[in-house]
Length: 253
Image (cartoon, rainbow, N blue to C red; front, side, top):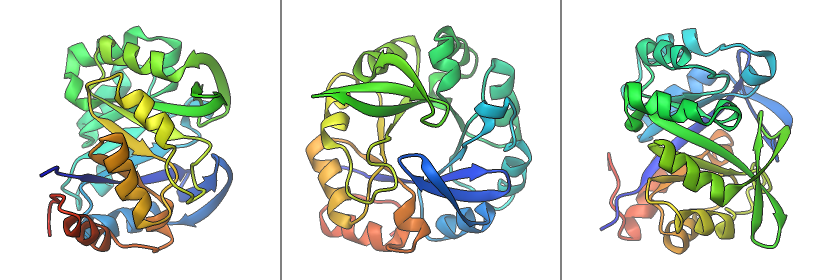
């Protein structure tokens, strides 16, 4: 029986939880601590905090947030956005994060993946890949919260980051993100069959069938959720009951 992991994704800008469509038209949802605590109490398996403007402005805003939220939340927490060095990773892990997610810094300096993995272990390193459809079965890597093209092919980059020491890959479809029209199954399947490390599917869930389809069709066991939780279309508990009814194993139910 396959065990499914659900991750609550919180995109943060300044003091606010925000969400857009295709990484654009960002709207304020509310206070991130409130949402994080609710998802934790509802049984989410992990939480992912992404600072959407940290790279743009060259700063780390989530350090104090992680210290504070870690006093009340006792599940794995991943932090991403603006992490540029091994020292940044050390600071976030010391503040209470269990993992860090790196995107722009990894693209600009791939050896940082090896450096982080060597010093802290691959289990705490998630490489975030923002993907946009370029042509038939071709996707390009973007950085800086979907603002910058890189010219890199998504599948090739996924294989490279695995080789360099990434412990997991967070794969977000820019085309599907926030649309609630389902995951990009072709993208996820293409990457999944070329790597052996865990793959987190992100971007597009709108209904329970989307979750079941990505798990079954792409052979993954980890799904990141944002809009469907923020807008209260489903609670974490409801989604876990659905998974259990489909003969998947879930935690806390």
